[in-house]
Image 1 (cartoon, rainbow, N blue to C red):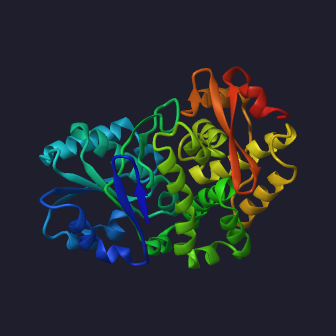
Image 2: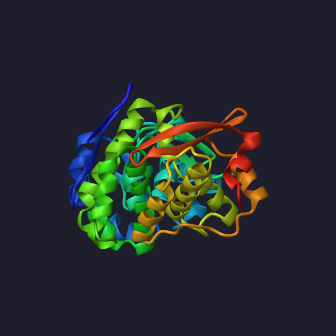
Length: 352
């Protein structure tokens, strides 16, 4: 699969045991570079040595960050800048992001800003990163005000996805990736939704993960190619995310996973849209049933209106005095509705 953009194209490899060919892959992309592998304390012990052995022709160093959302910070980014400077990295050198969404977002943000930008690739090892965050060029760290508030658009030189890495994930991390796959089916691919309905559950999905990942990536590839900088159709990928990000923010990052928050957000926004006749009757129950099939939550308590309102008004999807909300016209088709920020609390929290 290839992402084709106006000024850059890159390949996404989705293949079981792809980690066995990292050395060949990197050699096809880069020559004469120092390489820093940025990973976390859980992932690097699993795959780091294997990758380093395949990069014997390169000068390779590595930096491991604590696992979890707290590492997606400006403080950690600064630690990485210092590390790269100490290793005498220049603009001709490169980074491998090896890990889940936190590592991918952090490492790519650092790559895009160190010396005004150095090359990087993504090797996502979590399902969430494989179907969502490693693709499309969004990089970010969190601020105290909102998730992903500080970031850049920077495309990798390539993405390598090995579904075998999913076998080492805790089930919670698998579930949160499934939430993003459900989202892809809901907004753009009714056949993917039907596939999810036919599968018997999480283990069956993992058995068919290569095909499911590819279908989810096709959804993201299409909208990224149409709207690289998130001003139009790419906003559709944010279905469930406005409320989801507010849940993460108000609960405290790491208290509830991104995928769980998005799952709840999809239910909540659809419930509101149904009440207002903006989505068809019964669509919320379909989303609830899909979430429950894959052991994802469908509600979150308590709904604290003022905290949610504050978090939502800091959402990156806000444009001027309005916010773009993503709603479903039907399963497999979404649309954007613009709502004034002054009306958002009533719109999102009606009936609570």
